[in-house]
Length: 254
Image 1 (cartoon, rainbow, N blue to C red):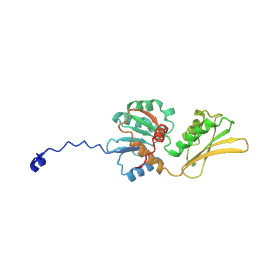
Image 2 (cartoon, rainbow, N blue to C red; image 1 turned 180 degrees about the vertical axis):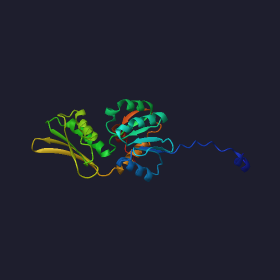
Image 3 (cartoon, rainbow, N blue to C red; image 1 turned 135 degrees about the horizontal axis):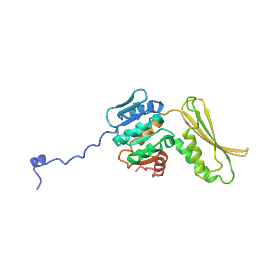
């Protein structure tokens, strides 16, 4: 027997799944990357519920789903304390924290998911992968290896973390001898890194990577930040994330 219209209308509606909370971010830092992150959020219509700047302090409308730290190393203890107090996942973009703040970094990673993303450029990741590939195949001869780090003049006169990681990608994969690190301060935004293998006077191979804007990097940061809520606590590097994404099967269309 078919149900009557009245009984169908009076039947209770199935319970609806509770809507997920909106994705919001907090941004620490007002430098070039912090500004690029703000634009990326505006373009993607992602609310920024927390801002932290050295000049004005912390402005919090609500606890964000993810905190993105693009500030200075000396501000990390406050970032760590906030993430621990509110159980907020962290996308960490500040260099050298394993050297300057190893304890707080480990403490945060034990409580919430932390993505360590010193360099968010996919091209830089591919450059390191190529360095490892050359290390696995170079054993016919011993090359001279040079890594060049170029940034504008305002960058500190020390080799960047990106250049150090590029040199390490070569030696960690079995390459020898170690790379000579050189730096140059000058030229346009944003940065350039190259690694060159020279075999005698007749042959050389250079892999060069250049970034002219931080907007693409900021979009990558925002995309990765979306994957942090709900993850288990722990410290993962951006290279490990890119490794996983690179190993995933390429989607096919039906």
